Amino acid sequence: MALHGRLKARSAPKPGVGGGYTAGMKLLPILALACATLLTTNASGQWQWLDKDGRKVFSDRAPPPEVPEKNILRKPGSKSSINEASSTPASAAMPQPSPQLSGVDKTLAEKKKQADAAEASKRQQEEERLARARADNCSRARQAKAALDAGQRATRLNDKGEREFLDEAGVAAESQRLQGVIDENCR
Image (cartoon, rainbow, N blue to C red; front, side, top):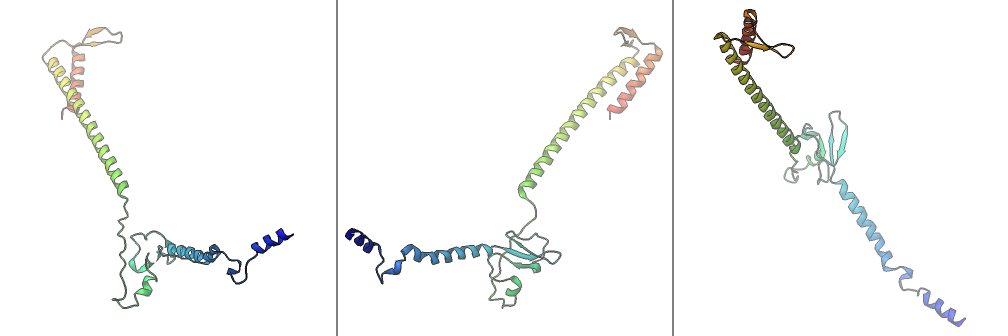
């Protein structure tokens, strides 16, 4: 029993020495105040403006460029609204620089520009290919027409794959066909 009485006496708080509070418990109100301060600083980074319908809009981003300056009620870093600050003398009011937004995403504009350039290059290559094909068709048609006009005998392949000579009507029809190819491709 004597041992039990000594342990009990050691663990009991001594009167007038802290009343049972530890140093960590004294820091609790200070930590709570610090957390509350940090939470309220987040709200100061908010934008506030009136939209086209007159409703208040709260955001962490700047308003769109089409919102007039008079409709912006609060900018980040200002303690009061802009309209309230305008009632103070001009020397006391600190102007807040507003970010200049162009409304255009630079990376998106660059990608669009590259895509347009690639499409223009592709279109130009296709036009060059077609021009070479037309020039080749023109050259061949002129050579064939010159041979027909010189009186050389002309042949063609029939359905069986056999070569047959053209008569005068066939030569006239072939000459007319070649003239159409020349007219279409030789510009």
